[in-house]
Image (cartoon, rainbow, N blue to C red):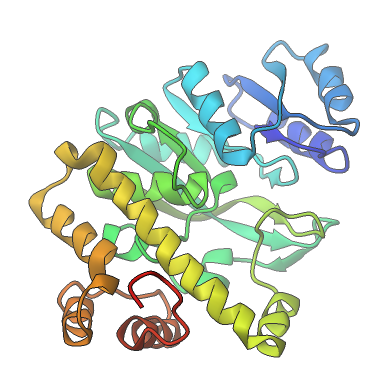
Length: 306
């Protein structure tokens, strides 16, 4: 768990982990330079539960914080815990049961559905996957352009953790690890909610909400800026696979990644052809239409290859 100024909800999250039906776990909390009472709250749990450890560290941001946790605390499996969520009692047991069915000598990321709640943990959506993403991604071509993995609902094995080399050009740790897993190993989805995804005013990312959509509708230039940022940032994230793990890619996956990374450098007709050839898309049909239209027309694009 990486914490930062999480005093409002962190106690409930830790308690939910303590209530897991699977008991043989260790919780490593890396505090990312909190200025509130987060560490004092965590220390209360540390003093009473030998499975919990707190590391007080300097502020480096959530991606580097989780990377440091993974790299400095070797384990067979790593669950990512967000400070403000709440795990359902059978979460660890459910995911580890699925893991027993897989060959964990290969890099694998496991993830589940989750229930979206308000700040008081009142459920507002029974399935984040169905309400926001339409379906869960398990293939590289899907995950390149749109992430359906929420970090707090995921687990990676040691084989995948060992391939996470650097934190450069990563949009978020969950998305990058999902892309990496689907590129060189396996991305496994478990169609069952295992935790409550709390939405509140201080969420780093969070679920899509009506207020967020309204802001973009009222300010369309922000919508285009955000959309193009997602496209170009996901291209850089994909390029990272070619830079750091090219030797593990099949020829087919390497060609797919190269096509996506370089598509904006191609003439208009070639861009249209690559979209069809590799079936580059979003999860929902209307999002796919927007995505493909922007790629083909480069409307409102401000990049160097405009």
